[in-house]
Length: 418
Image (tube, rainbow, N blue to C red; front, side, top):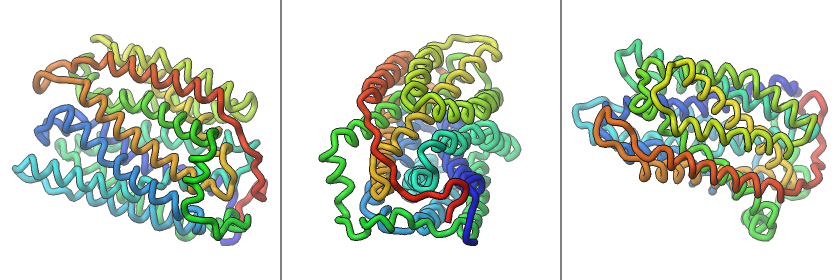
């Protein structure tokens, strides 16, 4: 297939993001179940959540040295195949009477999945940066970021429903995601054409350490990386423990958690494309500032909730979804423009590595702050995690004011990818 429309390309990339996000996101609403079934405490659960991003850190760091040396399609095909196999491996973790063994094996499969899945985000952003002109990139980013919304409104609820159908068997969601990923891989292999524009800029023989050398020499790139790290700390310190907090402190039942993702996802299905259009119309930084400052309120409320009626809890969680996902759209759009196109893949992989390390570290930080007396007991110190997340978010705002965009000179087709 010689040509692929922008819409079709973005749909495939969104499917890649969808499965990758569901694979990671499903860990959150099942947090309380994992702690019971595996006999673990909050800090051990934070290690389980961190296994994927810490492995992703290693693979993304390795990707810095080779992503810009290959056709984007080939890199995506190989990485996504590894992700699909890794997710399926989590589905087949044995459920023995030895809880410690089950836990260790599960951590291992999550780590294995992260090794392949860690560079998917960098590849998706690189392809968007290469194939979509900057003046339409905000809208494109909004479409792909809508995968987060669909993961919340479709993927996670379906995973939770499968858990209920199979009598609390937490393996079922991973089997669902792995099967869907296998189907998406076929579309990548047969439908996406070669993506080699970045190889035709005269940078093919660049030194493999060039991306890191440029980042070390460029204050702008350093600020961009730190900017994204602060954003990650400003959300992933809070996210892993939302479900345990909602169950043990706010009083929700496990089967009510699904409504948080349904309502939040439905809201972001509407808000994500709208925010993407606003980015193209009003500029990346103004929209980011609005969404970043707006996210402070839901961060504060989410980590300080008391027992409330379900509809009020859903109002808070919906605002959390809208603003947290909304600030990432202009942030990622800004990121694609701080580096030259021929170095974009390596830089995005370096950024993905930093973000993965940050998300893993964020989970461990919150896991070390939060304490729980015993099964069913309220979580303590979650409000301090919220204050910490707000502080990180404000640092990100300060860094955003200092980012500078570079000219984007890759030849792109306005309506198709060749």
